[in-house]
View (tube, each protein chain N blue to C red):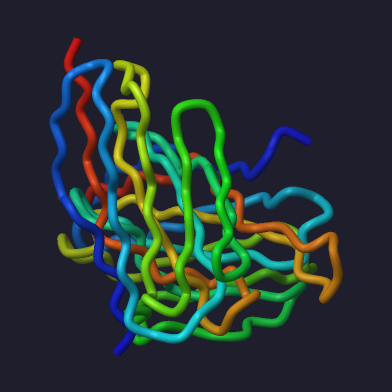
Length: 112
Length: 117
């Protein structure tokens, strides 16, 4: 059974600090997606990673994909309060269908 | 086009009643997905359509659940004889899959929060 696991599940960090969220998946895939969800809201697409070694950056967030290690990372640089949310990674099976298996989610709280 | 739209946003129903939710996808998207999300968990795939054809149903989708997309545009998800365990957020998403560079990832609606009392 395909598993997508994130770590940590909960993250409380001070503003201005850096941290990395990890996403491991158990199947062969060269595609991975990151979404953000605010409490009670829907999911917002952050990054689409479509190949081994893909790296994308948007503001204080940077995502990367290592398909050989079946690992994606979401790096947060100089966190600000507005980044507080739950972050999900997802793999689509079969690849390219956008039929997602989501990770467990990482609930991030940035303290002022 | 303002994105994926779901209606209603909230629904409270008594156990045993039937409920129906509607999803209007982004107009040029050919694929439509339904997910269920319970508190503190990631969304779980339920079913998806390409145009009007239902391509796959998860084993999570019991016989009490049925989804349709009759004209390849909007979709409905019906739950019959609701149970307390059905309480969740039901999310709809759409994407474009054409085999070419125009493919997009899935965009999600705001969801319908169902509470079964």
